[in-house]
View 1 (cartoon, rainbow, N blue to C red):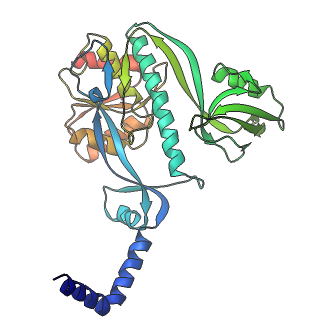
View 2 (view 1 turned 60 degrees about the horizontal axis):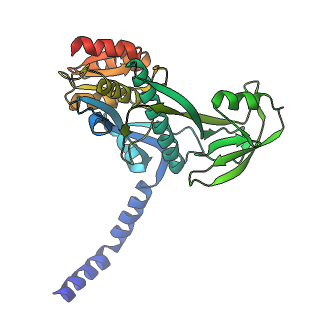
View 3 (view 1 turned 60 degrees about the vertical axis):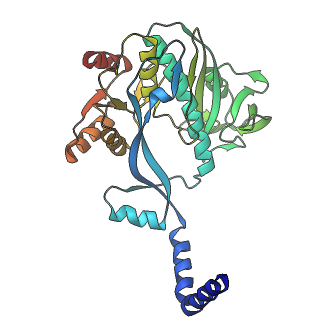
Length: 334
């Protein structure tokens, strides 16, 4: 039986080898990566499954919206021009590195979590104190002359401890352009290393040419556990995390009678920032049968309204101008 099958396969290959070679070559070509991202839909994540606050078992209906993004190949890029529900975006950064992008988004998620806790506690008038800042390198500019790596945590400069970002920026501003400094860092593997950076002129200022993310360390009289899966990262869920934490700290029941979906970054001061992929995040909210879609003020809100009209979505869209205003709005519809 096996020998018979083997002979049949052998015969088929012999008779069709030219076609098979062309097919394999075509598949290889079509799977070649190109410098584009593909966006092909959105979805939601149940925040209540990600956030636990001690002594709170409140039932919540908060959902964080996300967009499905993947690196394009020739085949998916062609599909994005054929199907209206698939979009593409050119990767402008010639040095784009997928591994580095994952590191950056993990750092931004960590920053977003600390910002959301600080915002929620302050809004709920709960005790919280900021007792430190962690500085992470998230971007290296083309002008930079440094061996700093994305993911490095900056511990000190020239053996002088750096308390926070303001002190870091002040130190850099006092070094002359052209001079080199030594920074002590902890890399992504947790190893302490010395890095070099030359002060260069960028936008008429002396800088080391890197982007910095600040993760605030805090002290609270409560236990909070926020846990996301490995493929869930980035800063755009901060706003919704803040609302869910605030809701669990208080007796407000903001989502008791409504399914609340939304997106947006958050600062420690409660400022809501714009995000990308509004079209797909709104689509995810509609598919999840949410009653309300919370979206940052400005272009994000305008785009959401435009797409809701275009696709005739039955969902209330709220323009989130501030965290406090959003809390008041949700209380009014609860």
